[in-house]
View 1: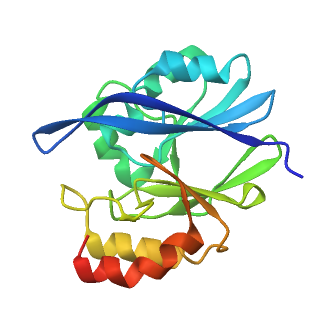
View 2: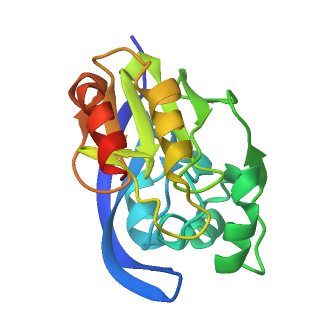
Length: 210
């Protein structure tokens, strides 16, 4: 049995893109044990996330994509913990728009593995919402962290800059819905779901175009 467990907190702030700003609640996921952890999406409140991590060693701050509501607290959390910030190379320009004076510490690529508390998280490049959007598959925990690629009820938004609906559909169809049916889908916003709950609706999403 894996030593890692999944912890969850919700942080609130704003999301800005293409001249608009929205109030949003974000899911922040922590994977680890009593000694070490990884944070997935350091959103809005570095102090709250650092408090949830506690005195554990933070091995990495993984960004599922480069939208500001998923990365805005990452530098402060990194400064507080010494953890490296990791994001996919294809979202490096988006990162720079939010943090022009602080580069990430490393770039993710498809199928890279991140190990924490004896559990592997495998990076799945799932573009469409953004060019560098990723999901993290943790088979030992029967979970995939999908960021804003797949939600309970359909794909992430693609009506904004740098997004593309056919691409996100390919990512969902080929990379996420091929995972075991009982895999829990833990999202960037809102409620979790499962692969088996979402898979039957793919054709409906394609037909409606979002």
